[in-house]
Length: 113
Image 1 (cartoon, helix red, strand yellow):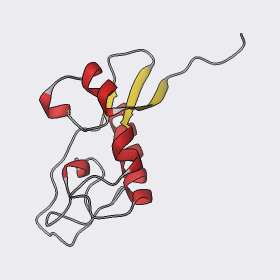
Image 2 (cartoon, rainbow, N blue to C red):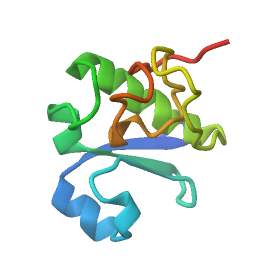
Image 3 (tube, rainbow, N blue to C red):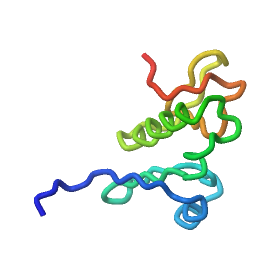
Image 4 (tube, rainbow, N blue to C red):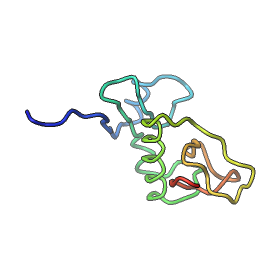
């Protein structure tokens, strides 16, 4: 077909379908990056894409920027990290901010120096 092979496919996936694909309790209501598939697959939880998750202190645009950065971070082998000790500091993009930023750090999609 002359088209280049796809390395990553991003899916906007319903919460019900997410539960079927990824039934593990710790993945409930989360977006998921599957680096075992080929091409790699990122499944963005549609509910979170359309409504800011409870506990995430930021608007929908900020959340969307965060979740895209976070899941693509997994594509390039980045692991989850914890926030620092300063609750007024920006959250690390590889922190699971979907689980909540309130009282931990400031919602942040962008990498820090």
